[in-house]
Image (cartoon, rainbow, N blue to C red; front, side, top):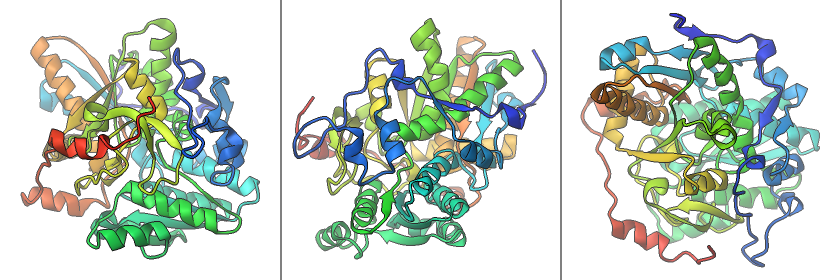
Length: 454
């Protein structure tokens, strides 16, 4: 096998199509449902909220490959293809027989994988004559990506940023504003949904579900405006498959094939991006790769949630989505991995989880930061708190390989860097962070009230 550390592709090897796993799933995801009529949605039902093209992509479960527009692919060339790196120093520190690789999505201009979907979503809006976009953001990665993308295509953007992250991560807010976006701490007094939440819970520090409600409300009440989403929905997972499609070629260059593929997990975007192109070989060719979604122990929708139709937001503006969920009223702990503080999983990953194609691992906050510091000390990159969950999972797998005395090839997605998350590392290094424990009663409070449709 090659002793190279870094595996690079040329610009002409950027994928020309996205991979649509729903077309090849033995069991298709259950449909999105109109909460009023309880009928399955059609693409045109989403047109008032999303651009028409992503609405069609959302419902497309027949086309295996979907063309990437040339204009989007040209923007991808700013930072793609991204490197695949063999983590030799991390392997040495762990004294493991495992071979550890990571796909480095932190090299994008915004520092994370989120730009892979922000660019096509902004492009489709521009092509359809839309002038304004709204969105939400947790830790700020999606908001910064969309701010860059809307500036690239000449659109206006309003971002509802979860209040705790607005306060914890001021430089992400500054990045969005640098690229011309308006940033509002959520919950806010600018929407009916926000005012209701503030009235009922004056000290509420926000959640992705709340921010989504506000962004959708603004989109529906603003002329020539649409909403965009950075995770959870099928079209976002589709756009992110450029990650795994590149990684397939790069693993071939390395002369190996992954036994385990890992991504941190909030709504599913980067996990799906690294996993789905490899998972198709499990589905079609009976390959045996394991796929691990590394979620925070304080927001364990896959490991401890219920599979049920639920809203994607707190106010109930979204369609009902078949998902593993903790309930749309679940208020996650104020961990620094803000991008993972979401109550539900996307319908595609939920179905794949239900059918046994993937598994989940919950990671306590302190373990994630320990892994993040180890990675920084061995590989030189300070990872985002979200990505540190994937690293912690990879460390567990590498230690297991040592205990079992087996060689194992591990691939994880480094979804972003942590250079604007240093206040979180400051708190960890000072001993001021803690783990958050959820009891069964905590979860039951927000799951037992869900209307049972499945």
